[in-house]
Image 1 (cartoon, rainbow, N blue to C red):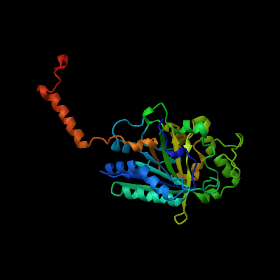
Image 2: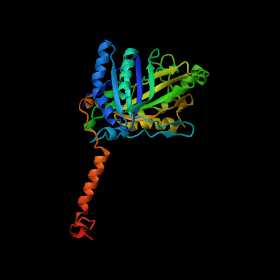
Image 3: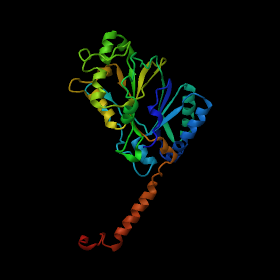
Length: 337
């Protein structure tokens, strides 16, 4: 198994998430950046000792076909999106995801700037989200986020592709969504009512008993014992000026259908709940899927795809060979008409 990128490491106090789309003709520049990223990360990190700077880089399905020839991760596909009776999870553009994290925001910002400079004229950054630690790993709703993340060996199993796709073992499938919170409506609820929406106690972060936990609570709908495990690296974000406060949801998994099943249950419901009640207070505004290759992938990128013109010429040449018998057929035995 290849060495994974460091998304399994503990959460840091600071993070920046960049999502970019590749401009037409920008593939060669993007490939150069991907090959140089490990060195860029080392250069910035060396200047900020103790920052623990990391950049987990992921590639979308359409971008993979534009950047690389040869094999593709077996389950890499576009984010499906979900439209429920009351809430929806939109599909938004994204070819590249840079999950930059560190102990300090200056290190994150410096690397994000370098990535942006290298992408100028070749790709467009369509979303930048600055994440931060909020008290004891809480989200802006005031609840601890990520308590049920798998640990140790279970995290490796849940987060990393294994022998089922050996060429990409050590990689991971990642889905990102931005959720904006309606804090006015949320704060109008009593603490007890908020706890029933989440399914955990607010102060000390204990899961409610089955008798007290509603079937449409966030914890009940996303029961990992029932659906499967994922590795989340969620971060709060916000803007006081714009009145926007939210959670950047980022879920890594060895199998994207695990995360997708959770989202289906949230937005389309379960046998016991019409939808996840948290969606009455948190609205999904983005949704994109990517594959996170093993770390060594960037040290020796696959060859670029043959240019479209070259492919067309090869196709024409092959067609000329087929037509050489003058009958427009292969002319082999009984196949000839």
